[in-house]
Each structure stands twice: as C-alpha cells, then as structure tokens.
Image (cartoon, rainbow, N blue to C red):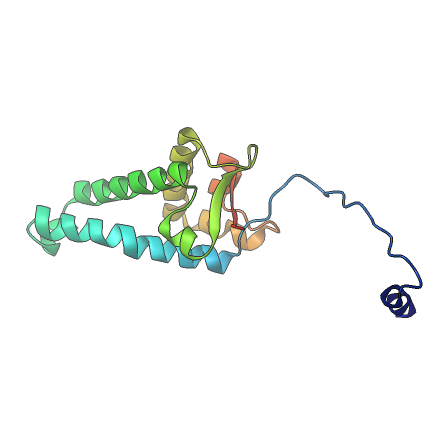
Length: 158
C-alpha cells in the first residue's frame, strides 16, 4: 500500500516491465456470447431459407418435413452463406452483433476457404453428436471441436 502512495506522489519512479506473452494461443470469446451469435445467425439466415423452401418451393410444412433432401439442401445453403461470411468478413451477422470475429490461429487474419469449409462440416458433425457440442464447457480455453481441428478461434473484435 505504501508503495502505491510513493509512486502516486512521485517519490519512487514506476518501473516499466516488459510483458512477455505466456504463449501464442488466442483467448476464445465467451460461450454465452457465441451461443447468442449462433441464435442470431439462425434467425437471420436459416429461417428465411427455410421459409422460402417450405412455402415457395415446396407445398407446405408437411411436404418439407417428409423430404430429407429439402432439409439437407437448406443446411447446405445455410452453410454456403456462413462460409462466404467467414472468408469475406471474418464475421457472420451474429458474430458482428456481439463484436466477435473468426480468425486463423496462424495468420491472425480471416480464415481461408478450405478452413471455413472444414469448420462448417465439423460444426455439422459436432451438432449431430451431442457429446462434441459440450467440449467447450470442459476446456480452459473454451474452444469447440471445430476451433481445435480447423486451427481457428472466435475472438472478441476490437
């Protein structure tokens, strides 16, 4: 406590210490923010796709529910749009709404097309196997399986 007073009064000059980064890993954005961003993306991107598919292309919800192809096509169109957002801006509308960005761990820039495609397929796989969706809750760095295997991270945008 006395040291703070001495520094504040100018009796002792504050020593400058150089910060040495502990490691080169990036800190992931918080899990609740990532979930909120995902929900925003689902409502802003997926819901219009499903509406168009269900009511304009097909004959209604019964027709859509009975068609496996229609569900896979909507997931594919959603994936294509998400991938375009990731490689063009590094952000989907949901990530932008919560000030987050998807970056490559190596370059600290936007992800490449190959990594974006890999990341989306890993997302589909982890969503279908519920156990993989819970990985971030058990990791210190809060990374998902798609973050780990595609070597990318969703970080807070500055």
